[in-house]
View 1 (tube, rainbow, N blue to C red):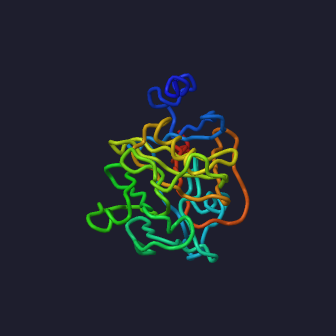
View 2 (view 1 turned 60 degrees about the vertical axis):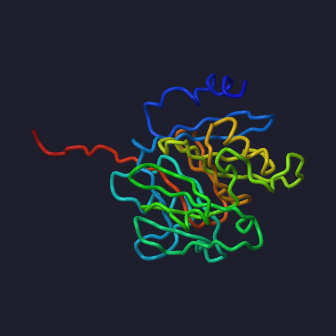
Length: 251
């Protein structure tokens, strides 16, 4: 029933003609916005600092910092951060590690183990439990650590409860089994962890999914005329499209 409803909305059909398309859906009584990314066609990157070393913090500053001809077609906050916007856990940008992997438990959602790592490589994307990543993690061009894991090998995080009263706006990422399809989703109304995790497992068939953050959740999706604003954030995941250059020379 769920998959049939999503097919009707165009979310489980053939890949869209344009990159990173987003659509609103209704799942188990709550509204979400979900964006499907084709890892073989879309230019997916993580961003934290501009060339001067200052944290971008906002989607508008990130767009302004892109190279000429590059356009930010999709973006979302991509992991928890300290007050100075530094990543809490592992962060790798274009092969350079700024923050190391954290595998110990601790306070807050990040420390609600198991947490995990979103790894982006030439082969595609993967969401991997952090301690498993520490043992034999792949080489990542980009990586961000957050927590808790939402879905682990097809199972919900063991601490989630269906009747939990902890409701919040939440955003996260799930990856298909072959690593070629990534889903970025944000709740458009407060939901608990159990509800949000089921969205990735049952609606999008992503066997591994990672919670990115809560109250600071932001989505930039100009294709649906949406660009959230608020307090600055730390890491940002973005899909960049390079516009074809126009030859202004004389014929």
